[in-house]
Length: 399
Ligand SMILES: Cc1ncc(COP(=O)(O)O)c(C=O)c1O
Image (tube, rainbow, N blue to C red):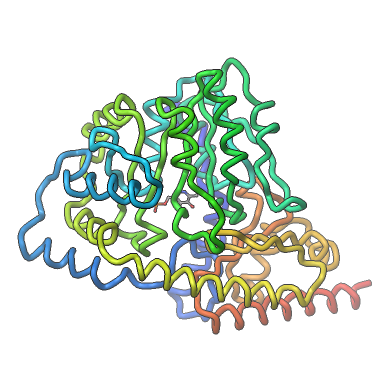
């Protein structure tokens, strides 16, 4: 009944526990939710009031499918200010979040039979979109031993005559790792030589904790501007996940194709959201710093608590808002064979929702979102430790 292409993609397995947690919460159960892939902060006030003004001024009609000119200009200005790189409006399209930005790129670039290289652990949508196009995701593993570093050699070794693109997500969901400028430069040089596109998912670009050089926009535009694409988003930086506003910056042929595609599918992002995003991008960036400071405190606090169990191996995330510990030694100790079962048992017994690693191509790992208050982090961590202790006791009795 369904189109063949739907047989190539699956609903993210990460959604199973999330769905059950949601159901429990609706029933009034006190679930500590570490599953959230979105900031817990409200959208900053100035963006909200820009949206209210838009409604009051009847800015409620279609805009051009690629987005209003003032917003496209604001995105270009933001990148000029932040990265020192100039883009024109013709090189910019406003999309329904970073997700549609990546989807549009996939639709207009990847052919059946193409290979698209990316790194794991990954955000599941990245390879699924590739599969939806009939292309093949080629996965290069990164490892906690070296902080989930993307090794250019491994990416380059995966390049073949069929490679159409390399997708890099930095900061990475779920690992929090950032790629260095030198590493990206090496990948870009190899890609440019072979006519391969490089797509950067910069959704978490504003959420990097230490001032490390991370001007990926300049690295790529200096080396291979004609084959570099940037997917950005207002979602995480400005706590605007529900507004659905992202963008692509890149060569105008690709942007024009994405515009045609969008013109026949979703058309423009809601006009009201566009005004909110315009304010977020052009107004004070102080709310971003305030949120980042709070995430940093939470990250360090949570890392400190998890350190109490040396079996939990945890790399300090450089960006985004997830801890991604490896818990294989805990699983062995309590006789649970995978993190999917662990997450289910933890939700059933202790009412804590975490995201199992399997969906990120990372068995043995858990994703713990700290986009929640320190009090809830404390409560959830206590429950996890008690759950593990209880299981160990039960195991000991059974033995
Ligand atoms: C790595 C990554 N890229 C892109 C997105 C897309 O977010 P949005 O569509 O809300 O901009 C997400 C959202 O979770 C993400 O984690």
